[in-house]
Every structure is written in C-alpha cells, then in structure tokens.
Image (cartoon, rainbow, N blue to C red; front, top):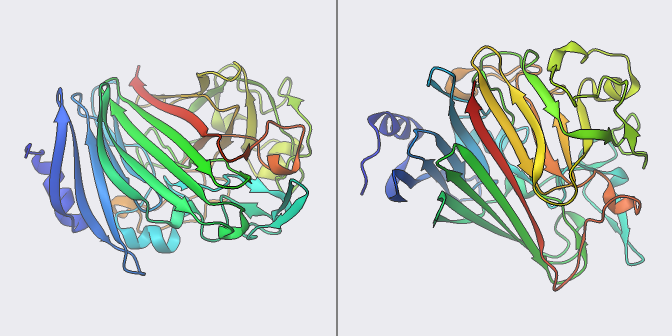
Length: 378
C-alpha cells in the first residue's frame, strides 16, 4: 500500500476511519476508508483522491457527497474550499445539501406536479408548495454503490444508484451513475449518466458550497464572479420560472464582466429581492458542447475556480437562506452567505415548461453530461 502523509492519518483517526487501501499512478492516489454507518445500518465509505500536486478531494458514497476539497493559493498554501461537516451523522441529520448530488430532479418543480405523456404525477413537496432537489428523501440522502477508478488523466470514484419506480413520485426506475475524477491540472471532472425503463424526467447536479478563502473564513461577498450568460429565467416570488427568458443587460444579474458578489446583492430589483440575493438560473452562452459557465476569484488568496459544463444553464446561489450552523468542519460556524454554489443543470420547472429544453428521458436513451471544476491561483 502506498503510504499517505501523516496529516491524513491524523484526520482519519479523528473521523474514525478504517480499512485504508489505495491505487494510483503518476503520483496520484485514491484511498478508501469506512466512515461509519447510517441510522438504518448502511455502511458508508469515504474516498480520498490525491494528485501529484498535492490537491486532495474527499468523497462519501452517502449522497455522492464532496466532503472536502483542498486548493492552493497564490503562495502554494492549501485550504479546504467547500463547506461541510466532520461526521456522517451531521450529513444525515442537518445537511443543507452541502456537496451532495441533488436528484432525481435538481432545483424546483412548481407545485410538485408535472404531466408526462398525458399523465399527471404528484411529487413530494418540500419547499413551501414546491418540490426541491428530488424531494424529502432525494439522492442526497441515499447510500450509493461505489468503487475506485483509475483513468489515463486521473484517479477517481464511480458511484451508482438505482431509484425505484415512483420514488418521491417519479415514474420509472432510474439507474444513475456519477463519476468524480481528480486530474493533475487541479481539476475535478464530474460525469453524469442515467437510463430508465419508463419515461421520466431527470436533472442531476452537484450542490457544493464554495468559499475560496477557505471554509469557515466568513462571507463570500468579496469574491469576484463572472458568468457566461446573456440571459436568465425570471421567476415568481416562489422562485418558480415564469417561462420567460430575459436579458441580464442593465440588471444586477449581469455578471458578463467580473463583479464583486456583494456589490449589488442588496438591490431592490425584483429578481434579486425574490431570491434574497442571487438564486438564479443563468442561460449559458456557447451551445450544447463544453463551455465555460462561470468563474470566481477570492482576491485575498488569489484562488480561482473556473466551471465548465455541457449543461445549458447554471444556478448561481449565494447562501441567502443559510441559517447559522455551529459545529461544522473544524468546529467552524457557517452563517449567512459564507458559501456560494454554481449548480450546472437544466432549467428549473422544465417538466412544466415545454418552451424550455426538455428534461424527459425515455427508455433506450441515455442522460449524459459533464461538469469540470478547475482550480488555479493568480
């Protein structure tokens, strides 16, 4: 077995990990440890991916969750830049979607209902009158099957989950696979695929909250963000799209040139007021292929996150509804706007909006997309 740094074993001991194994190539490694068991008795495994440049990502098969991700600043100092908890129990009992895969349908479906092929389906309602991120027991609360993988460009973990017919109200059995691969250029590639045995809808994303100054370091309002989008999908006061596509021109939602997150976040503009800050679906420029979706920089540390995706849109969320959470990672407290999300996705409420790109998946077809989180410093 390849020897891990002593600091890893100190962390492993703190978290109660065991059964360390590893595979790797070219200075890269992937280890897995037993992290604990859920309240229902399911064993949970925590994987540690490490590249030759010292970047490290930890992923749990509970919720297919990114538990930690370290990135270097301009001086080469590493910090964990995703919000989260130290224990599996915290993820089970009080997790506001930190780091997880949201599904079967990420974001909102209005009134928790949609019609497919002439039949109406009623979903679990968990966000006022609406359905959010897959319902009351979505993919974020499932233990996925998992295994280590090695690729020509990196090391990773493959996670699979089979969602039964009518789980949370969705028709069809959906077989989903998410693969995380850490590369030597400090990128985390996330590949999603799914298939079904009956017509259904699907929209998967990763819901990591980032703070490039380091988790627990305070508000993210000084981060500078750009988003590659000329337009967005306006919503009503419940954050359900109206069906319109509106220009960002002349609005506080215009991030086509770099803007500080806090510069216009208190605007009285209706879209910003409804979200109590930024909580908006941006329609990306660049067509259906891989393109840059967004970029964020922490000026103090110089850390940069670039997000590339094959998805048609990205939800930019600035933790506006975050309630004060104590006892988070390393004993930190997370408060209002201490993390932001770039959720690559299809548009919210698409099953009820035929004018939006379709999220319908039929037997014989494959749902597939890729998102890349690329880290650097300047």
